[in-house]
Length: 163
Ligand code: ADP
Image 1 (spheres, protein in one colour):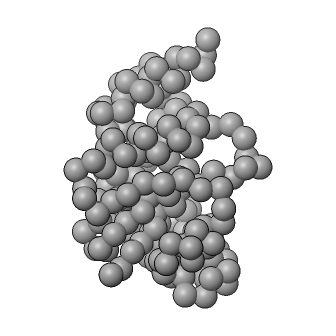
Image 2 (cartoon, rainbow, N blue to C red):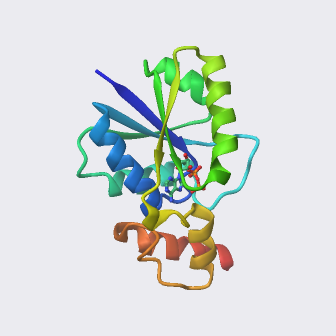
């Protein structure tokens, strides 16, 4: 059984993330989408539990996907969950340098841990959670950015932050 972990901030989950989740779920027997929160890094739009809830709602129809969150190192999380594969999405060459460095560090921390990179669907190459937050703050239509089930949640949260 091949279990992969897809780590990230997912603040909030975007259509780009969802595309990677679906493709990873077609490759691996089981995919754990793990919201990684760095305790030293405060802030963010949604607290971890709410990010998990949003991802659960948009992956409901994919039986081999589970969602979790952690504050620990991804390598420790992978070891604890008996997984030897991390999935990462790549948008542009500019993502590559930092991602390759992370992959090497993770392999050093847990030597059976490999990172598998999936290239973004070009439709989503411009998309990041920061773009979503920026667009939402201007009241833009979010339907090209996040799954429709969570549009209202993002709009509500951004409105609440402004008040
Ligand atoms: P961001 O805040 O930039 O959206 P995350 O930390 O939440 O990033 O991303 C988690 C993982 O998903 C990373 O491997 C990142 O490269 C990947 N990812 C983010 N957005 C996309 C996208 N539009 N297409 C493909 N992969 C993506």
